[in-house]
Image (cartoon, rainbow, N blue to C red; front, side, top):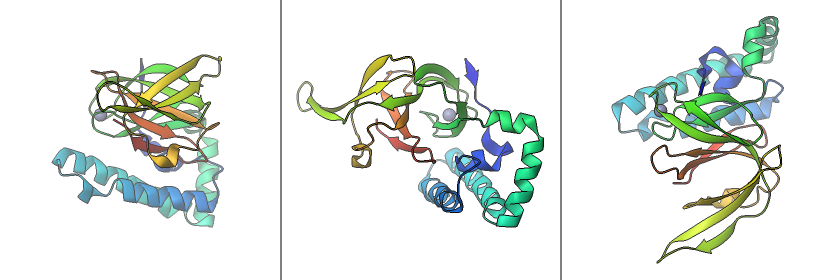
Length: 207
Ligand SMILES: [Zn+2]
């Protein structure tokens, strides 16, 4: 089991971007975080509190990384601390299937790992960093059910098929890109598909 460190220690991790992301990517990631975690979107008080926390961290990261001179100073400080650098090497931002809090996980090239949510502590499985190997196809299940069938491959060559109840059309042309899939701990059904390309981790609700 891997306990996910929270992202508040690193500005790049807070925005889910690579340390070599360019200014446009950083701005896009910041705006995405603000839109996705706008506290008004959450009715539940606890979830709203977490959304506020995420928004606060994103704004703090933007204040530093959004200004060239501040960013250079921060990069220098950051590179002198091995621990911080280690933590975000190929880190993936993976949302909890229950409370949606993102946690940072090392990319494991498409293996399925057991994770613990840093906020609500539930344990869940996620396939982290798999390659999407073909265009999704539509499959008719029992009754009126339709499923989107997506093929993935791990770095070890293990192929797997995952069926999604929803699959946003934005994900239809993501063949050859890296994905993580978060599974519901009770039903084992996919809850989030996270697209790691180009540099931002974008999670889509699929269950
Ligand atoms: Zn959680």
